[in-house]
Amino acid sequence: MSSSLVKILLCLVCFTLFVYVRSKEEEESCELGSERSARYLLYDVNPGEGFNLRRDVYLRIANLVRKLNQFDNWVLVLPPWGNLYHWRNVPRGTYFPWKAYFDMPSLNKWIQVMEFEDYVKVHGPRIRSAYVLQHYDEEWSGNWQEKYDERPCVNEHSFIFREEDEIWHGMKWGTVLEMQQLKCLSVQGYASSLLPLLTKEDDSRSIYLRRSETVLHDDFGGQWYWSARRSMRFAASLLKEAQRFRHEVLNSDDTHDKTQVKDDWRDTKPEHGTALGGPYISVHLRRRDFVHARNSEIPSLKKAAKQINQILKRENLTTVFVATDAPAQEVEELRTLVEGVLVVYEPSTEVLQRGGDGAVAIIDQIICSHARYFTGTYESTFSFRIQEEREIMGFQVETTFNRLCGKNAKCEQPAKWKISY
Ligand SMILES: Nc1nc2c(ncn2[C@@H]2O[C@H](COP(=O)(O)OP(=O)(O)OP(=O)(O)O)[C@@H](O)[C@H]2O)c(=O)[nH]1
Ligand SMILES: *[C@@H]1O[C@H](CO)[C@@H](O)[C@H](O)[C@H]1NC(C)=O
Image (cartoon, rainbow, N blue to C red; front, side):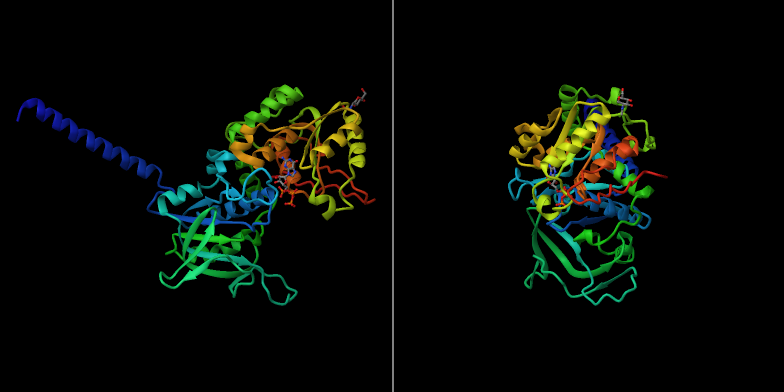
């Protein structure tokens, strides 16, 4: 053998060893959730629920995963976004991953998360055990206690058991899921009430909780709630688009508005009164189904305009940004009634393609949350999410927890869910 060939061979051996050692190191350094030890929690929410309640359910389940991590390494598999009742610009069957809306590295700073499509790439559409959560069908006994029991299914579910392979099959998120086991579980309690169930079955590497809105927050408004909520930062592309609009149309930027945030949300605790907001007021005006469903709490356009005009005057401002699901002619009617400049955000086709109605909703929410003063709609989860954004940025609570009044004489203002830990 020539000496140069020996050298080449030696080099090859060295290089292979090097690569091997490197990959070993990497394996150890990402032990948390490494292929070998990870367990996966999948979940979904009642298909009838909207975008912003689904975001709330994420917080409940994220903090369940946080607690599960005391026992094992759990990864939360994120349910794709699609088939939402209110989304008129997204065809049924089109799904968006979480990264279209949220900053994945930021979510991962609270718990380990993974897109459903990535789960399928590695494990296929296979899940070990599925539980359909439901409320108890039994007579209310009067005393509330935390509990869960396996029960016959109260509602119909779309999964079918196929004898030939003894596996449950069902369509979800545009994929045919295969589940080895499926049970219905009556639950009364918090997300963490399910801890015994999930830690007991340690041969189930993947567990799927359907109808997760059935369980309550462990710690609504507490430190864990707010940490999980703060980890839900928006995707950079949406922030950038909102920033462009604020700058070009509303003369608003983070330096002047005092709304700068640290790159890592864990580095600061929000402080009330530090944020000023841009030189405009913002309104979330929920219309459509709310006009009928909450008739006495939703103002007419005339009454809404009257309240907007009062706020503009009080705040010495002339511009109002309106986020709304109203049809265009209602916006035009409102425009004629407002004594000031009414601004709405009109998405480009590019934005709609990238994230559909969800992207527009988030951009509207970002713009609303940066205003000097905000007022929302009675019991709208869309408004609640804006209030939380403002809390996180450190606005004075008086500029945040407000809502428009309807014809009901008694007009209670929203509860002040403050960050107070
Ligand atoms: N872009 C935009 N979309 C809105 C606005 N208001 C409502 N929508 C749309 O309508 C949906 C409202 O449903 P949710 O997000 O669940 O909020 P909600 O107002 O509490 O409504 P419900 O879930 O029906 O109680 C949003 O997800 C949006 O798709 C708005 O101001 N701007
Ligand atoms: C608006 O202007 C008036 C008169 O200049 C002033 O008294 C008031 O404090 C201002 N209000 C706000 C919210 O800045």
